[in-house]
View 1 (cartoon, rainbow, N blue to C red):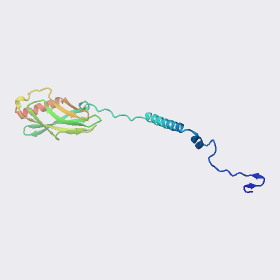
View 2 (view 1 turned 60 degrees about the horizontal axis):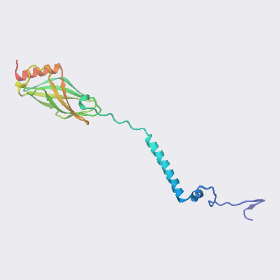
View 3 (view 1 turned 120 degrees about the vertical axis):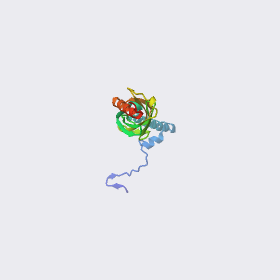
Length: 191
């Protein structure tokens, strides 16, 4: 007989998926409604796991907010430069201590009898942590409106950054006061 060898009988087994414990057979035995419920439950568990993973991911730290432009911008007086023809140059340095760039949009003198222009011309952008030198060129236009002994002359500087525009009055110190007084005395030919 075929399939026999000696005293032992050998059965040839074929896999027809007839094992009652087979997962495929178990799945087919379930009703359509129950299979849909099981698939829905599996999807719900997968969605819950993905949501839990998303909610526990570390969040990136938001960037530090940019402050008002005048709060972290400093203006210092560096000295005067003779220019001739009734005008004097006053050199200032603007430093940006913020995390964002600041732009100097306007500068005005406190005295009404003076006109002002700058080199380089405005607006001037100052990068974070950087300084820019600006020369203020003052020309006396009406000597009667320039005080003879102004003790606290100031300049108004308008700053702009990504958050706001702000104006700051800057008192540049005794050296600026003396240089301004000396140059205006010479320009107006005062004794």
